Image (cartoon, helix red, strand yellow):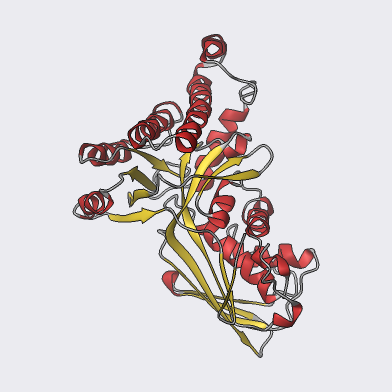
Length: 366
């Protein structure tokens, strides 16, 4: 925590929070198995600007999606749908004794493409939980790990969804992180691999449906992936499984290995070419063996690599959504290629995590 602490006297202050979108470099579909992941916050962000108001309810305007939500956070609110995340966060915090002394007029805006696999909802939830804590005068508002924990509780646990905590930690902490998903222990990694192009394929996806289906298949395999080491063990395990589980096994076994190898490359070298190849191999496993990519997304990746990107993969749960390419020194050129195809494409860089200002004064989140 920073020495610039929030005190209860700062309740009813003007508050601004923000959190980045994320790309999952390695370990896609591994976090809910407790396996490690490598993820990065990117410089597309959700921003929340809040001003105190005399009336007690919170009034939340979301102009990007033409929606306004109004509710009293100091009472238990019912959910209008299974993604009623803003109200869920207030419910979760209120059950733990958090109270709000005044209402707020809030505006939420975002540059993260929605429902594309870049963690727009998790970034919103991290920024929103930090706002809720700050609005209550709670010192934990400046702790990104606390924001990540409450974001996961209110977005995933509250609704019985199948996701893990990768999204929440990566958006809260920013940079490039290694996350041990068995212990929920994050560690920063060097951020030299910082230049990417994020492409929204425009293909709708069903995040919870894809996550639930792939997770169910993975968890039905009686294999301890944590204890699985050398590839010499794989053939016997593969042959013992039902045919419809063999690809899932191979993908998880190989992707764990790729994630460990990538950590070594990021920590001990600046070998961009090798890192790009590892990213592309990770995508092959996700596409061929997990079946979470689509021919159209495979083709978009191939076009970017042919144009000079060093590698890339689908981003997020899959079945549609976004992809990204690792293209140091060529991000604007590669983004223009996709924009010329009529797609939304963003040259992005690795970014900082949770941001918090109270009455215009920055609170260092660490």
